[in-house]
Image (cartoon, rainbow, N blue to C red; front, side):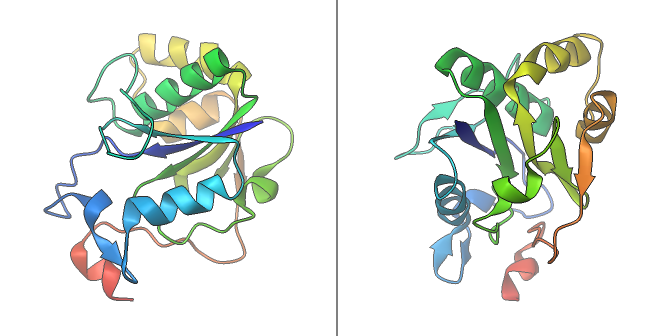
Length: 169
């Protein structure tokens, strides 16, 4: 079973306000990402922030580690709850396909080439992320490389909201 994880602990400095609450096509970004993940996952957590109506977990082992801290928290939580994989996405990717997990399924971990925060991670990779963080690793790309994650090109590029004007499309 797959746990969906919204990595939402960022500062949104370029955006200027809380991305999760921003509207795209009349819906909050966090609600759009949650709906896409829930369509293909057996559970859902929001990592790195408190968000009403969602199960939330803090980044692990501490806040301020960026998406890697959120992913580590999700993998740890998934392992404790009996999930086999984590399907991760940032709160700023409002157009996730509802077949994303199927597109990323294969041997080991897989990330979307243009957006490594979007990935499918086997729970057995939790010890590797723990070791990576303990050694000072902070880059999600470098962690993906360290575990030989496959990089997948999706048929259509995913939207990545970094600035308010990105929502105009």
